[in-house]
Length: 355
Picture 1 (cartoon, rainbow, N blue to C red):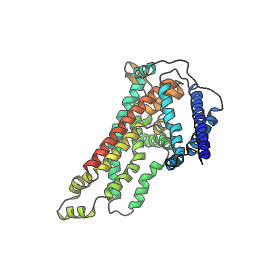
Picture 2: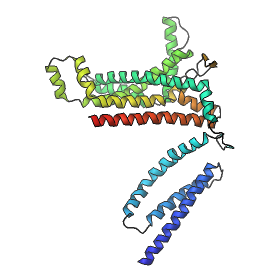
Picture 3: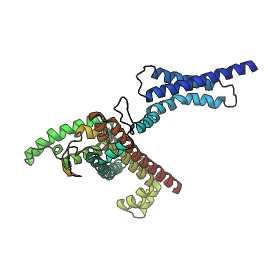
Picture 4: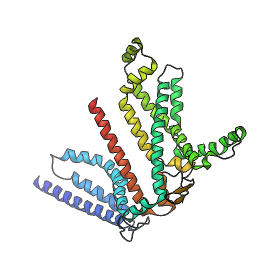
């Protein structure tokens, strides 16, 4: 028994050391930009060796925890490889002259200083915040109005729910090209016959930005509507009946009973709209591709009048081949979204405690 325990301990130790060495070697090769094809297999074999080493540890007391960890490991490994490691590498590359393949030197914070000196980037930040403000208001108002309609006693309510939610099932790229055709062809022909206007609304920066807002509201309001419907259906019917007996009209019932009782739902919908609007990319790219003229901003003439932050980061890295600068912008974007998420969690927890 003692020999078996000793051999298991030695096997476990060897596997753990070999696995750790393999993982570190694979990460170092990837970090240094090595083109050696053994990186991927070495990373996988190292992870498997670590798991086997944990399994063969001759400790009955922690064996169940080790087995649980082994079953949980694929999820943790996938999350680390697809989220944590790329995030850390992105932060690192933002301080270098990385060209998408390798880097030659550290440049400190020059990418960040260049980023905030770029008028196009500052414009995209301001445009994104303006887009977020408009959509928080419009998406929630439209979604709440649709939810009130779908929780009324009208016939065909289920049909209306499905119809309003349908645009959310269409991909943003497809949706953008559909509306682009509608704006550039169908709407132009209608306005040409009725008002004599030949230009598409996508040809001017202000109207193109308004068109992006319209498309986003049309796409996302149905999703927010379903959340509001869920909140409205949780309002007790006896409370609504009591308000009717007391003589409260529909507006009073809405303002004094329904809205206060779904305050947590409103908070959730507000932050869902906030984070989604910040990450707007596909509709922006498909509908206008960020084009639009701004005659004078920070002393510069801009050609990205409808380009929001996510599309600006994409164009910086892919179109302009400035991967390090794109990484710096992406890190800034991550910090903004992280702050929004932290605020959301704090407000949600505070409301749960108050309730």
